[in-house]
Image (tube, rainbow, N blue to C red; front, side, top):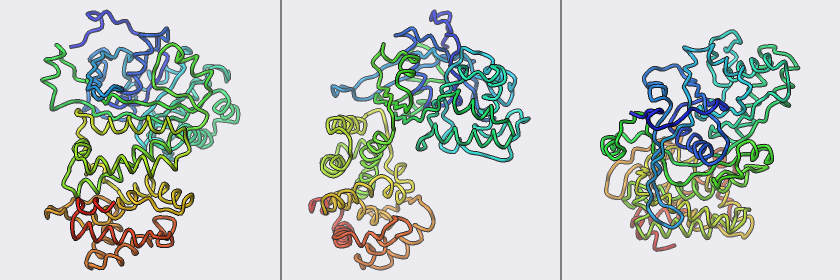
Length: 477
């Protein structure tokens, strides 16, 4: 078992409140913080707040806040790497449903400067049922508002005693959304104009974009890894080599307070997240979404196996190089570097990323991740990108619900789409099937049949895929 005294690891002064004890923050934010603590004079400890009432997982306190982050993947030189790091940035964990007073006391510590969170995409929500007197409030923003009001009261409204908030939930402009919901609670609870002014002007609400695949507790490898480590670790967590933390906020303040000028981490302080969001969605998520139906119909089950297949790898790389990158308005060199990092991530031998897991809600994913590049390519050049359009034809064939070898596909999407495809595939009129899907104006926001060449291309690809298989169809493009 990990022990601070034996490892000669002192606790850092608490300067950060973290909502959420899950694998992602511990393998992403707390991992970066540990590097900053050990390579700079940041000297910042974390008080973790467990925001949900459950007892199935022990508190981090049972290991004195210590755990091992196991980082594995392919580095910049193309080498397979494994790095084991004992993370000592967490001081303690507070179960807010059992220690509400201890939770509120965090607001009394004027050394605490940052608040970080990851309460899932469903975490930043508003509920009129939450009351100021609740111990605690049900929602994360409700709990946060109560904590912020406690700080406001203790600090007598001093605008210099607020926090820097960096939510990591996977929603667009998460900092702005969190601020909006907290202000709604301030209104609901009649906490006054002075408090609302303090929320807006006494705190820095940063929006963030986070990127790292965290595979969590390595249950299947537990015994092997503990033998290698030489100790038991109930909280070890695993993640890929690549990571990126983009923070939208005041560069001078954040770099100074986080000591970012003293260590080389992949943390970017920017004025606007949008270009980085478009890059991630277009290249990383777009490659995933375009790959899935093509690779799965081909007979492949995982992302890594898809990258080992020369046909599919060529399809994915050319789709990124020739059809996605040209319509993204970012520095070309930076886009190419990101693409190369993405391909290495796809090849990571330590991540078994199932294509069927990525396939969840593929209709919405195609619209959000690929369609913008298709339409932008047509807008700029009057050309429809053949590989991205081929992936839509493959997706329509995927929703037939059966692989080429006859295996049933466990489709997971909204019932309205599943029912629609079931009806469409009762015919073998490929043009009818294609035009019906392309004509879903309520879904796409546009009748895609009006895009010149779209109906003909999707119909043709769909027929070849269905009659002769994906491998033969790939030959056409």
